[in-house]
Image (cartoon, rainbow, N blue to C red; front, side, top):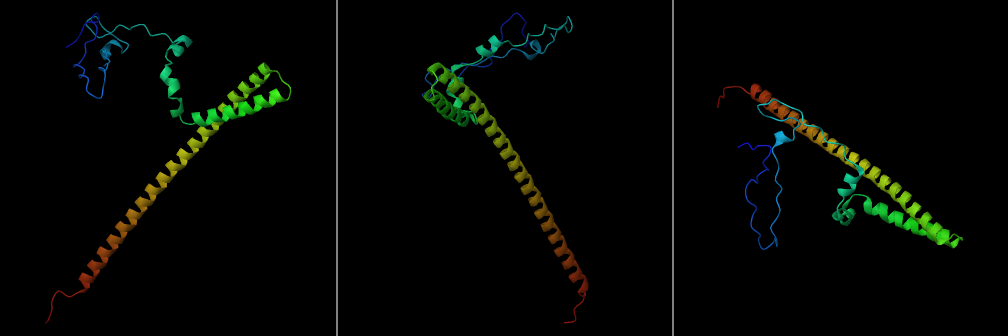
Amino acid sequence: MAQDDNEPPTMRGSPPEPTETTQQAQTYETFPHPERHSGAKAGAEGAAEEKPTSKPSVQDAFQSIKSDDFFSLHKIPCARQGLMTGIGAGAVVGAGRYITGGRIPKAANWAFGTFFISSIIQWEYCRAQRAKEYASVARMVEIMSQKASERAAKEAEAARLKQEKERQELAKKSWYKLW
């Protein structure tokens, strides 16, 4: 059943009732018809182009950041290692700058700069190591599958040779038996 463009999308089915495990009802997202967002309108009037959407702005990027993103930062690969390295290096350089006679704001600037740079360097190093590890694992999988196919080919060849040998032995036997 097609809807007009003026009507809001309808929900398909009803959401389940809350159970003992869920304290409140879950929210379900409804999706509009794909022909409305495919770039062209379908209908009797022909295919008229919709105006394209504008490029995302910096404000859109900041609005897309949620507070949960900061609470799940530790789940990002290499983030913990990079941040811990940055914190340690920043603390050492900041304290060293303060001890050598720098004022607190200057020592804090040095500490933050060191934190930022060392975090990025450690992050990139860790990502490169992970990429290298993934490549080596992929190569190992490739080698193991190649060895398995070679092993299967050798077994098939051995079975073929065994059958050939049995056929030759049967051909050498005489078809009659005297006693």
